[in-house]
Amino acid sequence: MVRPYFLNMTSLILKPSREKSLLRRHPWIFSGAVAHLDGNAGMGETVDILSATGDFLAKAAYSPNSSIRARAWGWLDTPVDADFLRLKLDTAIHRRASFAEINAYRLIHAESDGIPGLIVDKYDDVLVMQILTAGAEYWKETLADLLIELTGIKDIYERSDVEVRKLEGLEEKAGILRGNPPDKVEITEYGIRFTVDIAHGHKTGFYLDQRENRHLVGQFAKDRDVLNCFSYTGGFSIHATAGGAKSVMSIDSSGEALKLGAENAALNGQASSNHEWLEGDVFQELRKFRDSRRDFDMIILDPPKFAPTRSQVKKAARGYKDINLLAFKLLRPGGVLVTYSCSGGVDAPLFQKIVAGAALDAGVDAQIIRKLSQGTDHPVALNFPEGAYLKGLVCRKT
Ligand code: SAH
Image (tube, rainbow, N blue to C red):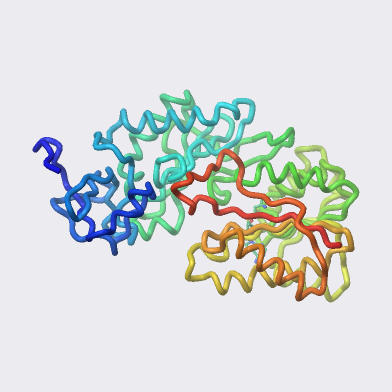
């Protein structure tokens, strides 16, 4: 294909027959598929992706340090500029029109919203931005200005203090990006109030992906003794109490998170006698409960990522099996286990297999009564299956 000279820019040329995944519109171009760079490009700059025979495939952000050498912005040969990004952001924001009455949700979900490396979470009148890739970093200031223009929100906090940025050759970074956001913001989730520490909390401050699942747990919790493992700031615990749980014990290794959890319970007028907040390691605490024959009617397991990538899957599988096996043992008959994996390397069928193995080894029979995933504000683009990271099972011990 001969292109007019003014359209010719730096091109990343693929090896022969390495264009297949791009033709399926998967946005990642791995270094192993690249033959050479024709021209010069700095970190995050836009390049054309061409097949070995010179066909245009995509516009992409160049990431010279990463094994994901480029990420596609789009499949048309049109410029990537502020107007292009405005349309992308505006489209993603309009997809959330049904969230108008909800004051905390994910506004931009990176690759699945067609904007690789950009996460934006909305907490009431504050936006928290997380930039994960060289391409999104290159456009950071433009993206921040566009977000203000499109949402009318003036305060933006940046939480790009995540390790994966190293793979892109980027430093960790956190702080005020626009306006004057407070460190803490109060949000409401299905009528329940939470204080979110956007400056010091995990991720962008709150695990918004579990919003709908926390509500569901509340509906299952009536009259139950609940154990919430990996509780963070008490999301599931407070929903469970609001749903009529008899008692809730929350375990987390972070004392700070538990302190905010207790404050969140008080914010909702919940009696402190209903809650126990235990700072400890879930793997050890579950063993102590087993040894002291303590039991529960409902157990929630929402651990951090055990396997961010495929290479750690075996070790992760052992971790999931361990805590699920212990949880099945601690459940009373008829008890409910709500168990999650947010590991990219463990897909839904594997996770179900691990949980089944845990029940078998615990010597219990159980049924799946619900399959769960991340909320609808965390969509999964069909061309990007990696976006489906959160898997959950609600199991009943029979
Ligand atoms: N369910 C929570 C989010 C959980 S995130 C919510 O809805 O908000 C995972 C939590 O696990 C984090 O708070 C982290 O501090 C905690 N954690 C990580 N490893 C742990 C361990 N070994 N024992 C106890 N808590 C742990």
